[in-house]
Amino acid sequence: MSKLLKDVYTNSYLESVAREIKIHYKEFKTDLFLDLVFASDWKELELKMRMKRITQSLHQALPKDYREAIDILTKAAPKFSGFEALFFPDFIEAYGKDKKHFNLSLSTLEILTKYSSSEFAIRAFILEDEARVMKKMLTWSKSKNYHVRRLASEGCRSRLPWAMALNRFKESPNLILPILENLKNDPELYVRKSVANNLNDISKDHPEIVLDLAKKWYGESAYTDWIVKHGLRTLLKSGNPSALKIFGYNNSRSIQVQELTLITKKVKIGSNLNFKFLLNIIKRSRIRIEYKIYYLKSNGSHSSKVFKITEGDFEKEVIEINKKQSFKEMTTRKHYKGEHFLSIVINGIEKEKVRFEVI
Image (cartoon, rainbow, N blue to C red; front, side, top):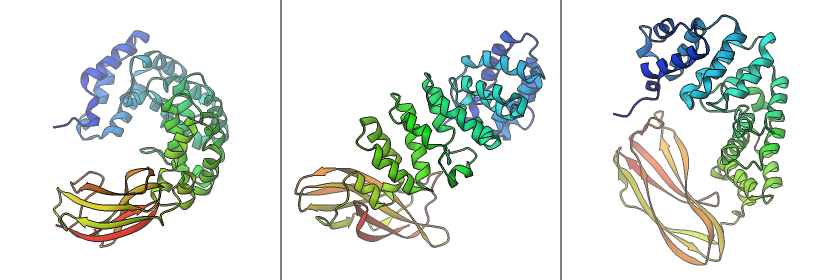
């Protein structure tokens, strides 16, 4: 049985946290801290609530003076890393948003992000004082530390998974764009991935802004080309003609899909849909080959998802493509018995579509 993420907060882990804090604060109430964390309802708490419990318990066991408390936490934090250490920046979010501590809190988040990440905590400060925090994040985008540079982008993503949404940035991403400009040629892939993900978020609300930016960036460097490709992934999957044209995938007339065949037209939940088809390339072409599954929903309608097969430059030829698609139950998708559809998509255009049944 695989270990649940929430189970990273073991007794030994939290005892190690307490030991490290006690080095920097001799009066730390270890027993109180552990008793508060492992209260009777601990087993029922999910990951995020367990992290919050640790934050709240630290607050009870540390000095009441905020400056003194975060000085201790900042000294202890370098010994802990990864998502399990997110309670360090979470402490800043929970107790440091008032005006008298605001600048200190931002400086502390800059330090703590080097060990875990302040990408979630910073969002509460953006909501509190958007202009002030975004000015600081623009400065962070020029930091010598790549963790801080990544925070400048990741922290202001409008649709960061598992985080509070930044609805103002869904309405207008203008304060984000100068940060991305500063980071578009960052030497760290870790940072460039964040820039691409931020662009992808923006594309869901303002595709025209991202497309204009992509046209300027594409061809500037290998780094910007990579960012543009990954930042436009949602637009590419949706068959956006302007996005496809940037990469030369703007002609599907010379490409024919032939003999689309389902190995079995009835697919059992838990097994695979196996299919094959011929691609007749009439003349040398740049091709993006995808397939789309129209999944039956519980209400009888369908929702589609696009899967990429391959892309690149192809000579005049006929090639056979064999693929399989899993219909195993997943936490992110439940399968329903009934009519589904499969289509082959070439450069954003659906070429052939067939029906199959899930049983």
